[in-house]
Length: 84
Image (cartoon, helix red, strand yellow):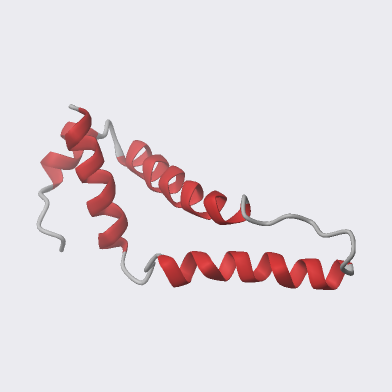
C-alpha cells in the first residue's frame, strides 16, 4: 500500500498497539498545536467562544491532510528511522 514491508514496521515498533499509539500521539500533537492557539475571550459569549474554538479545530484540517493515513505512517516511519 505505501511501499513499506510489514517487517520494517516491526523493526521500529514492537507491535500494532505501539504503532497505533505512535499514530495517535502524532495526531494529537498536531491538534494540540491548534488548540493552544485558542484563548477564551471573556468579552465574547460562550457561543462565540465555541465558534472560535471550532475555527481553531478547522485549521488542523486546512494545514494537514488527513485524507490518507499514508502521510501519517510516512511521517512516523521517517521519524522512527531517524531516531535509530
